Image (cartoon, rainbow, N blue to C red; front, side, top):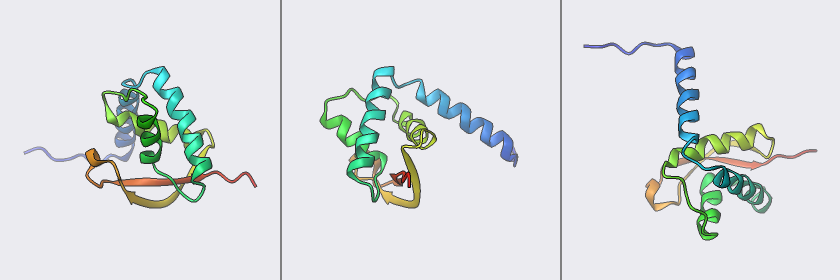
Length: 113
């Protein structure tokens, strides 16, 4: 029987590696479209939006989605690092049928004062 090793730093390294691997499934064109759609979502929903709002807008626009859905998480985190959005601390059930109501982190537009 193997025991799980409790090592926070190793977990963070593996998380970073996994996110980097997931983001390789998105083309540069998709990443650019995602950034643009996230900026629009932040403007249209200053009180709160999720990745579902961004993905929904991309799907409506006919943007080809990545084969790996986990590519979305790293892109949302990049929007936070870029100062476009900040997490609200709330989670909202996903509206995408394929996500079965999985909780999604909610973001709001960053207030610049």
